[in-house]
Every structure is written in C-alpha cells, then in structure tokens.
Length: 230
View 1 (spheres, rainbow, N blue to C red):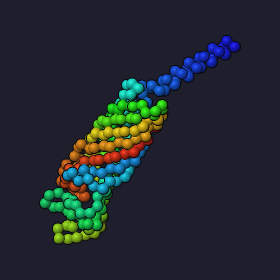
View 2: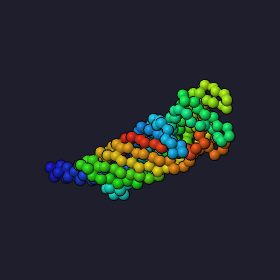
View 3: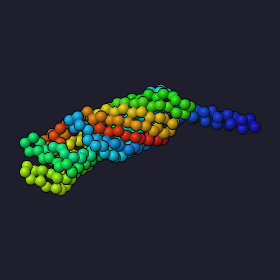
View 4: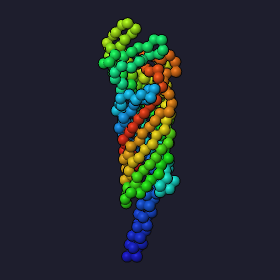
C-alpha cells in the first residue's frame, strides 16, 4: 500500500510539473495557415484586392507569461487585381489598357517575420495577443496577366499578354516591410488577424516591361490565420 501511495504521489508530481511546463514552455513550435487579401500601393493608389493563401511553420520564444518573440517561415500568395484604364509601360512608350482591361498580378513569396508580442488575460484559458515587427520576403514565382483592349500608339488590339512576375524584366524579388497582428490565444490554438505594409519599392530596376507599372510598387496584405502549437 505504501508503494502504491508513493507511486500515486510521484505520478501527481510529474503530472503537475508537466502541466506547468506546458503552460510556461520557453519555446513553442506551430503550424500556421490563413487567407490573404493582398493588393499593391501604386503612387498612393490602391488597386482591387486579390485573395490568396499562406501556410508555414512558427517558432516562439516565451520570455515570460506575457512577452514573446515569434518568427517562422511560410509560403504566402500575394498580388493585386487591377481593372479599368491605367497606364502601363515606361516613359516615351506607354501602353494604355482600355476600359475593359483586367490585370492580375500573382506573387508567391517565401516569407519570414519577426514579431514581438504581448498577451493579456481575458478569461481563464484565453488571452488577447498583440504583436508587431518587421518581415522579409523573397519572390519565388508567379505570373502577371493583362486581358483587354490594349492601345499601341494609334493601334488597338484585344487580347491577353502574360509575363513572369519576377525576373530580369519583372518585379524585384526581395521585399521588406512591417506588420502588426491581433488575435485570441486559446492555449494550443491562436486565431487572429495581421496586416502587412511593404516598405520597399519592388518595381523593375531595368526598363519597365509590359505589363509592369512605372509607379512605386509596394505590397499590402491583410490575413486571417490559425496558428496551432505542437
């Protein structure tokens, strides 16, 4: 009987220690996925939003019960959908899309954020999570397509032109920006919202090639996400 009580007591101690450790783990890893609603800032003009997805892994360092630092690596689909009349090309040889034109820019990024965050207790088992910080992203691929009436000087042609989004004649691959987020921590799962503002002008460095814009070209992205901790 004494051995039984001893084993029971030891089990309770281990269970309690494991529970406390799980609640105050210095490091956590997770799987994060969400829905993007992205666009581009073009000379202070914001085109129509384009929907995409993001998925990746997160790594969190917990400094205390409230403060944490989170990073990770994810694949994120961004871009923009532009409709109507807009100048395309470079000075001296501009192409103009007709009123029925539609341009869809697709961008696939490998992205790594570094967010500093703070948790505020709401109810037992739930916390409000606030975070912000920089991100760096590298363009892996994607295509940009224009369909509609395209005016070449005094000629009009209706059709579709498609080009690689990134590359020698496309957008610059490196993107830098800042983001902020808000969410609710349910213990093992965090559900939230982030908004990113690209700070780097990623327009082509060489002669702008159709269908890329000559104006300032910066990413914008809003995302709903779920982060599941292992």
